[in-house]
Length: 571
Image (cartoon, rainbow, N blue to C red; front, top):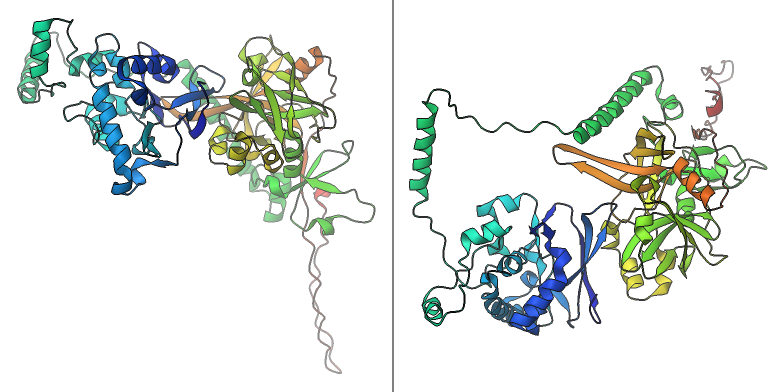
């Protein structure tokens, strides 16, 4: 990051297409853009572009972008200001774009610079005091890059009102730029005089479009009468192997769900929660756990008040959410963020890709505070060994989570962590980022519930991939996936989508791989292989009202006998 910068905004790239020029994402070439604009147009125009800091998930594509600038002043979207208040910044934006216009026609750098003017939305044009600032540049809403007319309308809603009159829509490729922009010719006095008389941005020729369309249609019609030549649309490509794998896992989950629904016909309503807990899922907020780790693993749902559950001599219980708040932490790895969890009082596990190459490491959590961390060990290169172990000062205040096998399909699970999508709007995280260390005590992890959908065992690496339906996003990397007994069954690591299928696959590295990694690091943890007994506590029956006294000489009315309540463990 250059110089003394201040945070402006943050967004994920969900629903957006990063523009590429020469097979390179524009956002990754900010230094080139700034040097180019600074040299050719001056500092005031170079300051027009905010600096992106990209946070990646496990893969090459950027997942979230934070924007920074060294400009001072209140930050507001230009479109939301009153016209009189917005005019100084709008005038400076018009001047900057006019100064930038010759560079956009440069034979070498024009396509790159012009493509950077693609903006995600009208709200990407900001006013920092009286200075204009562009964020979300080099991005377009998904599908718009291939829609020439739609892109023109989109440009009119973003920068079109401030651009020179004949400036076309920013290009999305070098070919697109060459088709609509007349490059500046080599330096020649005669040519230069002609250029001064010519318009800077040639308008697109649309007069001949109907003629061309008619000619093409006639040619295709003529070809259709030639023997052996038929005009058919291009057939769509077959479904990829990856799409078939995702489809198979998805359908397998639906079949299991169907079987559970069929089995539910045998039970009356009070027994559904105990016999088929995955069919009637509990909320993690209602699950209470024994504090003694040696006690049998039970997740008892709060269908009655905790005080009513506890009998004489009963052990106290804490909530699953409380345990995850104490066991989950936010990883601050330089400018990137991720999640992690305690496996000992002074040891935290996360993903290797969260901390690899970070200049500094900090851990933040509601009970741990803000403390420095030291990288102890990382897993081998590769997706299936994406683990890292961090050491903290002793007495950090965290609580280690126990570990259990990866479980079975339809096992209820909870993903705990700090996704960047949520941090971007969290005022507590904003305070932390601005240097308020005390804000760490207010951090609460985001909890998403779901079930295990599928297990994929990799024998060579001795690890199981756990596919699950708990929502995760960039920033969840390294966070725990736990069962309803609060035990880690996996480490959330990455997600995969397929353009041909409306399916998102969410992956956690199984606890078997985690235990193998910890063993190599000299950390011995005994997994708890007992089944998680998901039970429902019966409601305390209200006292029956007193029967009215029967008149003298009459027998009291008979009340039908109720069957005794059956404890959940006996059902």
